[in-house]
Amino acid sequence: MIVNEFNPKHGYCSLTIESAEDLWTLRRLVAKGDVLVTRSSRVVKKEDEYSRPDKGERVKVTIALAVDEVHLDSSIERIRVRGNIVEASDESVSKIGSHSVTLSPGHSLTVRKREWTPLDIRLVRPPRRQAARFILAAADRREAGIGTLSGSHLSLVTTVESGLGGKMGDEQSPKPYISKVSEVVSQLFHEGDQVVVAGPGNFKNNIANQIRERLASQPVSVIEGLDTTGADGVRAMIKIQSFETLAKDSLVVEMQKLVAEVVKRISTGDPKVAYSLPRVRVAAVSGAVESCVVSDDVFSARVDEGELVDVLNTVEGRGGSVYLADSSMEFGKQVSSFGGIVAVLRYAVRV
Image (cartoon, rainbow, N blue to C red):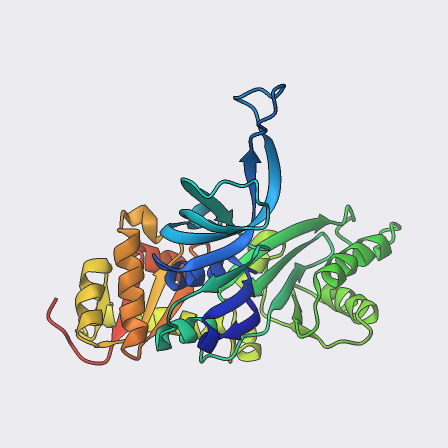
């Protein structure tokens, strides 16, 4: 999430949504009674004698919406906000009746609140250092899978096929293939990103060298221990020891260890763990939750959205940490299997 301007004393925060994880943060931040300012479209009906009463012109307009309802649809990465228009940049826009806006990554908006609570400020300015984004390439002579890892969210960008034979002695040159892979990586790269290349054999070094040239000698890490390539290789990369060592301070490694601890406690009968929303809610209210992980497909377990938001805010309000797990990753699937939400507890709670 890009925070463009934040002034809690004057009651507003301007921000830009970057990822699906930001939508979860926004869902927890925006509440009934807040005012949300963003660009939207609205049908404006003309009232001249030749206009049709059932037709109107759809215009782009900046509106301020007094929030009444907020709903998150994490499966298609959007959030819908409904309320009444209290301000509009076009005077022809009616302020009668309700209006809804749909927000997704890339949208900019301003949130106004009468009072910014410590939790609100924590959501906008999380205490955890913002983790670097990783650009991952799982490659050999035949194919290269390319993806990005931001926080705990893994996105598969593309797979590049080489069309080459299996032996280095073949007449066809690998240069176009290597150039294509390095081009994709360079287009994804932003200042501060970490590029990691892995795969079986030594061919990955050729790709890494070409990427370094395109990125003007920006650091590119080559790691060992990955036997697969393509999309499967990208998914597998984050689980190998060499990547965990390289990214030891990253959010994804932290979460993998946290979920592993949850599984360990459950398997050994350790009472200092809770899973499923009803159990985590009891532990949260008692202040026992040290860390909580929620899967981005938690709603498939038929949990109530409002109750979930309340539980997550209670956890952080009482000193705990909240993490969002990508359900396409192995540790995210484990969280999903326990009802979509798990928690490591400071002390045992009867639930």
